[in-house]
Length: 529
Ligand code: SF4
Ligand code: SF4
Ligand code: FES
Image (cartoon, rainbow, N blue to C red; front, side):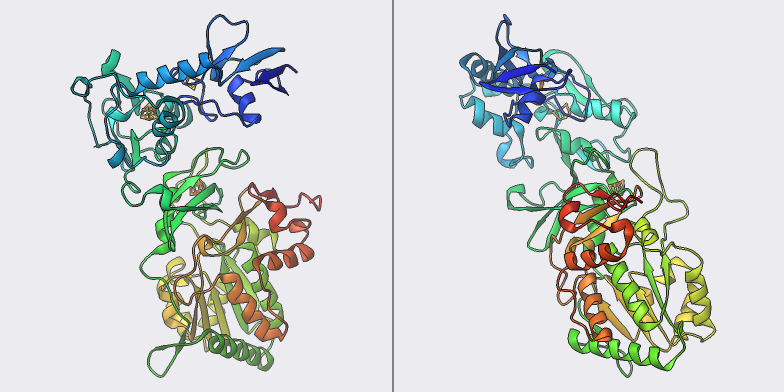
């Protein structure tokens, strides 16, 4: 294994490691535009030039492999002069757009100019070459050719990752411009990633641009809940509103990428129809209720019905939209009530999938249900049939709009025959119209918890924004309902619920929110299953 010295610090690295990677491991940033760890090396921007002892000329750090005994300088005068010169060159034809550019705050031209350049342009303003501005090139992406530094990251992404080749360079010299390939539009299922990897404001998101300055936004680590792949994401939010999803690197799940459907799925988390406070059926309409009153009335009524009926007279249906913690609490509730539990994992019949990230299962936690012994099967239909026959004393629906997922008329008729229907959901959906009690709960962006993805990797998400108005995180609502039924203290935190799950369920054994960390852990790893 070769040893390299960078800015006086020594490091042993594996054969094949490049200078930029070795420096990164030492915490030394070498400025770069074209290099991206998820793409093949292009070596065209020259921003990463470094001084390597015994080499007559400066070398690019992104495409120079470390050799034993190599000594590299990333901040000496030769390197600084080169960095300054490259930036001056890149900025010759750059428009004076910064005050109105939506990349401000995360633009590598702005940042490197301040860090490595800081000189006045010697190029006369009227002589700048002008190119097309604000050109939509796909449903998600806006192109500003003048801002492009020709790094080719986006071109390599569509050539090497999606293999769709919508983008290419045209013309020569300072007239080179990025554009769509003839007859093409950038609308592949992963098109939004080019916005993330463009180091400057040449490619911006048509969904996000001009909606918020990034320095006002907070970030929270999360997991996309729009399909079973569970891509790791960062939620950007401010004052309770989510503004965008961006992929978060996880080599075991999504590398650096995410799909467009997942990227836009943040909108579904804050739609217009959110349930905002507990509702209890009155004489002719729903009446808003305080949480404590609604929980106590619901818990007591379910307990009474359980006592006065044979086991199985209460049904409980939950969906694979429910995090592991909620599944656990619902199972505990079912044991207390002698209830029959049925799980549903619904996706459209024609749901899109591919051999990269996107899965046909549009639920984030189908495997979490399976690992807790609740494989989605015919039990839901059996419960609906029992309800239709008037055999159920009560039914609890958790994150489940049955009318949308099964034959609507049959389900409506069945729900009408349920004497006591409790619905816990995030949004006002049709099933809730038949309910006696509606408890408003948060989305996964509003709660701590975990999902188990299609590879049975348990992944953690964190509360980014609060639930609207009176709504509560799902685990909290269930923990309190369980407490009313059992008379025992309620779980105070989602971590404690997960700890109880891990203590009783072998696939989750040995795991905790803390040990799952930012990258997730395979279920069954500790227990050997
Ligand atoms: S548009 Fe952005 S990513 Fe594409 S070549 Fe230009 S600067 Fe690079
Ligand atoms: S592939 Fe699935 S989990 Fe990943 S971003 Fe898309 S919808 Fe979300
Ligand atoms: S990052 Fe090395 S040449 Fe562009």
